[in-house]
Image 1 (cartoon, rainbow, N blue to C red):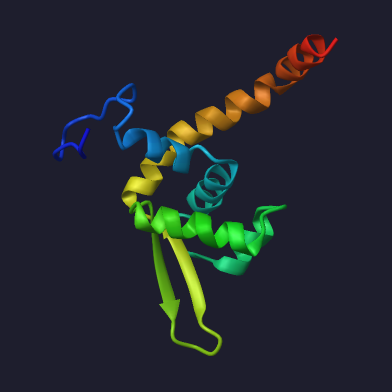
Image 2 (spheres, rainbow, N blue to C red):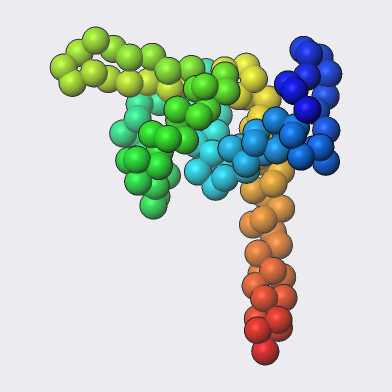
Length: 126
């Protein structure tokens, strides 16, 4: 399937649908965490170092790759101050803000059901 015209929905079950790649990008823990941090700050911007500080465990390389993907997809806006060294700021776009609601629901579900998932995994391992 080629990218659908504006306004048409994709078909997740079509192997050629770009929706699959989009879900791969937005379905990561780092994307969810970055969107949450930026949503909490909205409409203000957050600097790269602050994002990294508020996302324990994320490497500089992984955060950079995550933010590049979010910028490319139009979910995050990036602004660079021409200082030495440059100061880089990020904020959610309107489209990015619209992603926070479904990601928040997924994070809540995961947090509320982790114990049951752990129990199921423990039972499966016996």
